[in-house]
Length: 129
Image (cartoon, rainbow, N blue to C red):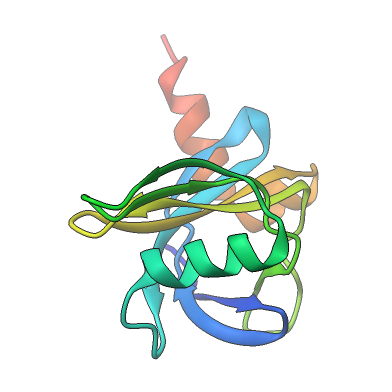
């Protein structure tokens, strides 16, 4: 069961995600973003990164594909206000036709296991005999 998490950029809500994907051993959670009042996520994040000196790893205007480095002002919260915080931060990757994802890197244990028991369980299932 996935929860719905709020995504804020500089304390302004820009969307939600279910953080439905994971790399449990690395403490990573990521998921598609449902944007709120953002017509072009590609343009939005490109402009934000350029204005704030954030490196963009990949930028392909033709496909509106962007892969950002860590965006410091990007934060994810549970409905009860608890931040899903990654030691290495959060970044955006995606393209117009497939959607955009937020990734949170380095979520510490035991918080990760408490917040995402389904991701930890799925990972453990991969190595069962």
